[in-house]
Length: 446
Image 1 (cartoon, rainbow, N blue to C red):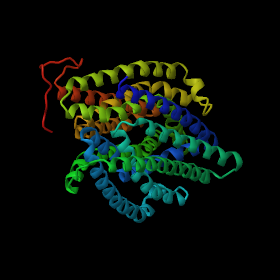
Image 2: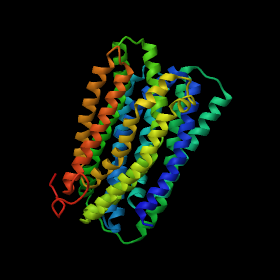
Image 3: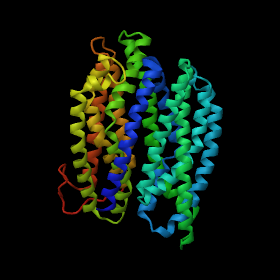
Image 4: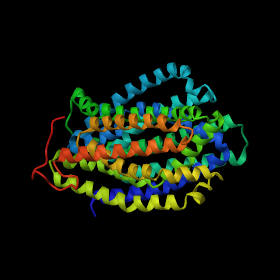
């Protein structure tokens, strides 16, 4: 069994365990926070993740790609420069966050300490990114799997202990939920970084080649900047979406409280259930980035196509049964959270969104691996524009409301999948069935 398959199996098993814990975590949150509290929690979460994405600079992707494509003697020098860059960026990011966060109105309706939680996440996530990227690059997926499991275990235990022993007001409960999330990130940092220091000590003992700082930074940032731009755009879109959805529902005649409740059911219940099988897609993405990068760098194009076919087959094997189960068992699944007919309806209507999302993640990993990060960024921009326009157009109709919003979400995800897939086929010079059209894959300058 090769490293690619072993990595997928290992990460998938660990991610399945983590997703089971995530499912229980969201059940606890739903019951403790209620529909309105869950809406508040899910509304602020994208804004927090936006800050975290900016802090990480997508170093896991760029470092893993660098390591997968390079000789091991280059790793130590690259890691040294990456650490220095991360330290400088973390200082600036933290200082800017301290200055700007008090003036961001998104946090005004929440407990003031939430801003402190966001600031504390910046250094933890930034330095964890170096370790995560290294282990992805050398394809030691076991450590990534353990870190993901530790995060969910700590989060579950923390929430259970807080809410089991004490009773809090709504705003304090939201604060505690976010604090536990921050503490779980610290646990991941301690574990991964300690393992990274041990691994780096072993690397440093061997022979290594010194690289110029500017060369390393250029190579890392060539991947990090567009990938970070992609993640920032995605995070901004996710941060805007709650307010767009609520504003659209208000335009359709829904009250403010009902709009927040409906968004809580959509994001906190339907999306939680629908994204449950995505742990396999995420595992595929993590494993495919270094694998595709290595194969493409050494012009092993047949291997690249083989990996894409494997990813598509795996996605079909788990994706179709998953959406069938969601559709036919929507009522009992959503009743684990709330006794709500609307949540079950949302889950049923979202099946195309979830199915195509499972395909998007490995396809995006392939685009990153073959150096088409900018294309992935443009695809996400166009898909989001189409989705948001349709959201307001159909969601503001009194006859559709949330159904119109879900229709727009489905359309955007299908469009994104199609753009990714067509671009990959064009770059590799193959047909839509991944059969060779020209005899030799096309290498385009981008």
